Amino acid sequence: MPNETSSFDEIYAAHYGDLTVQLYAYFGDRQEAQDVVQEAFCRAYAKWRTMSRYDDPVAWVRRVAWNLAINGWRRKRTAGRFLRRQRPAEPQIDGPGPERVALIAALATLPDHHRRAVVLHYLADQSVAEIADRLGVAEGTVKSWLHRARTALAAQLDLAESEDPR
Amino acid sequence: MTDELEKLFKDLRTTTLSEIVPPGTPQIRATVRRRRGTTALVGTGAAVATVLLGAGVALYPGSGTEYDVGDPTLPSVSASDVPVMPEPSGPAFDRMQAAGELLADRDKTPTSINATAAVVAASYENRMNDMPADTYTFHFYCVGEGSVDVVVKQGDRGNTVLGQGTATCAEHDATPLTLTIRQPKWDSLRISAAGDARSAGQAGFAFEFLSATGRTTFGPSGPPSSVLPTVAISSGR
Image 1 (tube, rainbow over the protein chains, first blue to last red):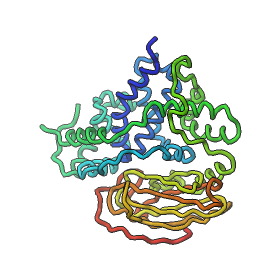
Image 2 (cartoon, one colour):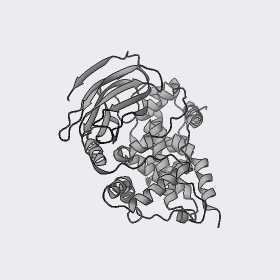
Image 3 (cartoon, chains in turn orange, blue):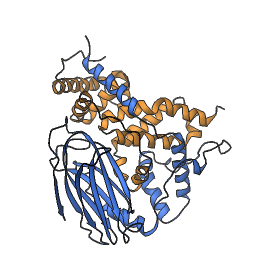
């Protein structure tokens, strides 16, 4: 049996960042995204003995993280949140640049489904078919969401419209 | 055709990844250990577990209480390796929860931006990241006795005070300290709360930021504006 502790640590190291970026784009709040991803990994670790035998435990973590995000887990968690807030201060970093601010702001104006489809496509590198399978909708629906989202983003960010994804 | 959106997302990914500091797996192990301990307790401990696990049970019926954590024969991180705050318990925890109940209903208030709750301490500081430029109504509720001096500052550092006041604690029908916070640009906010001798360690508090303009919901409201910060303090709602 592989060392469960090291496999968990490796998966955490490999996927925490990317998953946080995706949820940051979805929330518009990096701290909230970090909290949600950390919680998803906590739940995975709590049952890691079982999960480590899954073909793709990362898929489970992703699904839990997105479910937590969509269900507003962090906002419901007032009782526990203060514990995390007591952690040592993070290193100081510069604020986001204007392009990032504009992109996050534009994303926030999209309907939830459109925003999620865009994030999965551009940040999780998923195809239309994969997004459709994951969200349980027809591929045509995803194409429509992506098309509308891209049109809206292009207008808000003053970009030239480009081809729809496959 | 060059997809400008792809480039923007790629930049977003690159820059954000460089800023993210993962809390780390030791903290995960500490959290899971703490929860396992919590589920073994009754009373207030059970209440905490209910709050923390509620979402999981709802999402995954039948699996929410499964805690077969790792291999117990493997070396684990000792409790002294990770700084973990003790769980609040007893009357102070009840007051914290009572204060949390006074916050706006998230489902009915889309402009409720960020909120938290805790037990009053003699010195407390919190930080809200990524708060868009906007005008916020800040409510600070304190349940218990005594009072709490509250200061809201702009950014991760510096001493730009956007609002301050004193919240008076009450066991019932606590009247919130209400401040109008004008966030001049996309930035974090720091909130410090200093309880007096009667409230520290005994009272519970909760605070929230609501977009007074309705512009900001749970995400950003748009690019930073050039609104200058000013302060207006009032008491009561």
